[in-house]
Length: 114
Length: 113
Image (cartoon, rainbow over all chains, first blue to last red; front, side, top):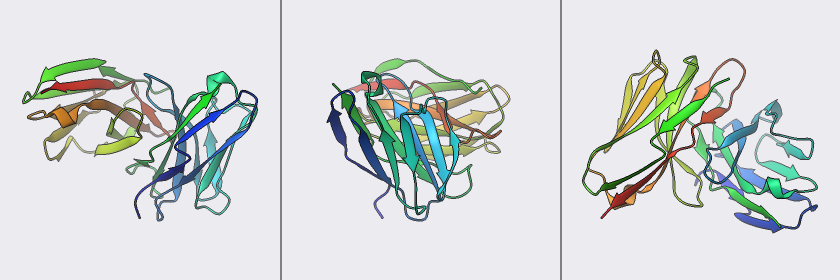
């Protein structure tokens, strides 16, 4: 296992298009998190899953955003009708079941909306 | 709501110097505090995790301390090297139903050869 994997690494899309990102966590990790990071800022929490259950969503996660983790393994984050303000790095992290354990991050997906 | 602040925002020092990065948080009810390194355009690499019951953790040339009562953590880097150049982020893992990490904006560190 080589760690948390995210695909694609880069995505350029036109405003109004839909995009989907994938995250494969470390295999024995039950918790999976999505964060968004804009230039010069720290990552901001979007949502997290415990196995296949989505347990918390940030106010940052508008109705255009949806995340799934159908079998408790990989997760997808979809953004519908993209806007220029969605341009950011989208980071995925995973940890073992207990919430107070070390989080491991993937390399991120850089989204540019033109 | 937890808020995390990192000082300084940027730091440039000559190679070989020891340095300290500071992190403060407003809500002391944390599970743990984690320090990360981020290279330009890359994801986050975990450096050290300090549980709320611990005072410090060490890994190689890195030492992180935690003072929950004052809401502060420091990352000490000994004998800095050009390869240490990166952005360093601290993140507080709070309880109370908000399970995500709250990050500071980071300290952008440059080690001059």
